[in-house]
Length: 508
Image 1 (cartoon, rainbow, N blue to C red):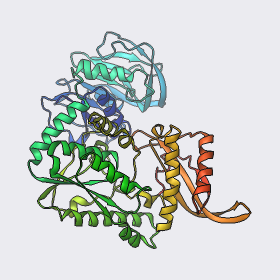
Image 2: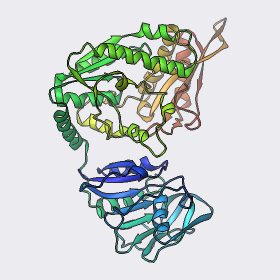
Image 3: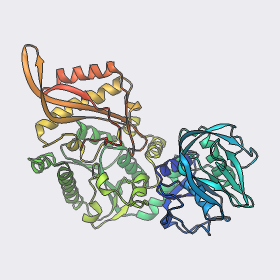
Image 4: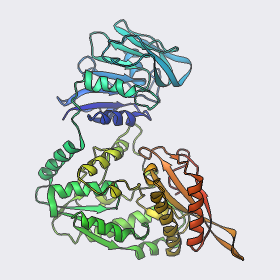
């Protein structure tokens, strides 16, 4: 399978490069600069990412590129471009002022393979504190901005290019064209990697890997585990057993609805209602991290107990997707504390089973495309992400059955309202938070002292950053009124307008 390698130097934009390459229907992989894999015939080109580091730093990442440079098509982006200049006879210095934001690129050589059919001038996005002040002799300038002469260059006699801007960022108007010129033109990739080809290849690999052994998969009702289940079902049929655990912290009627939808998909699903156990173990617990640990522990134990009943099970399937893989082996290392918001993990440590991860090569939007190619229900594929600990981290403070009831009712009104108003698909994730405060209200002729809830709706690509959604005032007014009138125990509704960072999407 044709692929592009992306060497990661720790840039916040590295995943965006991968996403843009994938949008060209070309498979690519991200690897940290200190763990570059062996090159094989499938590798058609290499991209060097940006970095928060400076090439002038004593401890700057400087990998051995002797097996790549001059032998494979190579594109250095920002730090990558500066590295290729600095290490081969050029000079990089601190810029008089940080070059950040939009700039206009003039194409100096429109015949160059990287710049073909790129309009001049074109808007690009800069983000660096250093700049190339002198290029080596064989380096030819092919694009400049007002402040950066060597904004783009080509090494003569090599298929090596460098650009000091970020083509992967939306603000680089013709960034996709530049990446297309490199990936499809220079590297010669045929752009044939598609959901259909992924399904065909993955199903064949799963059949070969698993054979006639049994597989267990923990379903969550979310997109990732559902698509993983369908891929496995295509490959091994009834040898797959799915377990869906109700921790009592799901959305209203979700346990019954999800079980029903899975059975309609032909999946072999066991539903386990363990809500009373979770409520009992969470009684009196207010610390957020402790709550997450209890929920994760109980899930593992309940799942494990059910899994032991399945004879001859040899594999544990997981809905791991590519951002999880990248994070676990990134330049900066795994962010276990940050991810504990959402993960209930720990299953591989508790069970003597081999791991299979059918989606570990895919981004979230690609998972949805694969599901669509398998004719899965769009309502399931378009479902917002939902954290593993569920409503347990949307109830601030102690979790009780009564608080869960209140939150489920309010959440249903909010989510149903988004669907009815045609806003659900415009939002990446939405939910309601039950706050640990009570406030005075007036209902009829009576004074009330009841709970407050916060509505949360964000737009995001992969959850790593997020911005609050500007929902219409009319919709917010209607939702607030309906929640207060219909949900006993709530007399005040607020809307969360915090972005991530500095806030998180969830509140705990």
